[in-house]
Image 1 (tube, helix red, strand yellow):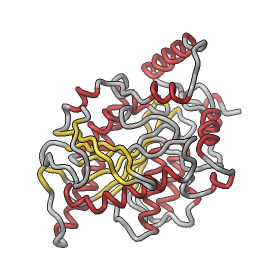
Image 2 (tube, one colour; image 1 turned 180 degrees about the vertical axis):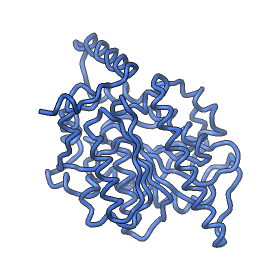
Image 3 (tube, helix red, strand yellow; image 1 turned 90 degrees about the horizontal axis):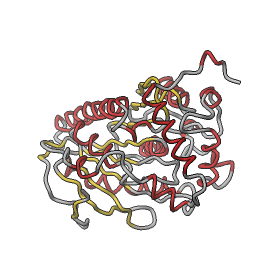
Image 4 (cartoon, helix red, strand yellow; image 1 turned 60 degrees about the vertical axis):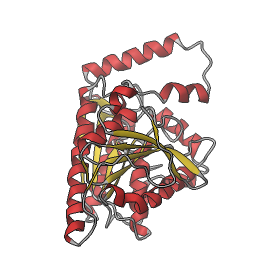
Length: 345
């Protein structure tokens, strides 16, 4: 049992949010629950999409290559000069959420970082087991590397929860497969340890949005065999080396079973000579970014990550320009060749 003195309590707004969610769940306990219902309910933004879209110059619905076909995606183009592009992967335990649930997050990341953000709808479980989501994201990253010159050149990867895991995996794959070179990896409360245990899993096992029981359910939907839980493509801590990785900025929720995975991974990266930093938002629970409309910590965490992206991408662009690379470009309404040009707002 965890030491009660070591257990932190969620903040007041978070407690109100959790209480409201529990009350709503109790009222709907008699209703049928299917995977389709879950996905429909959880692929909704916490703020009107049309209003979020006003923060950027354009939101373009498009399709990009995945591992087995084209993936739905959205490109968020900020106002002014664009200094790079970010491949964003949404969370949801590899099972739910999508382009809509993370629309506002991507709008804010694009506006505050000055980078274009490409959000992709990778293949979900249980229809698609590990490592199909990884393969989809890798294919999208390879395609984006060929288009990045349109947005100033430098590339970063980002994501929350399962999407943060995918971003960390892509950083390792990019290192091991000779590119593309990444300016940064932005990881919000990622799952990184697989079957390896950490204290926070026991401390915040239940009652804090994400429970260890729910984590087990997600794993049952996604993994094929127990061996997958030791595969670096699902649990990046198992990589043979954490040296030479793109700098990591890891944003964490304090009352989260995954908290110690983020701090542990950052420490392991630092020990291997890679740059990594973490920041924990006190009194928050897993998934708090998705409630930025209600939780100031969510807005602050998005801003923190966006500013880190801005610094990293502009620094990488400066190095590239000094070496005769691509200069920053002014945001253009053009769409990468072969992609559909439709407003998503």
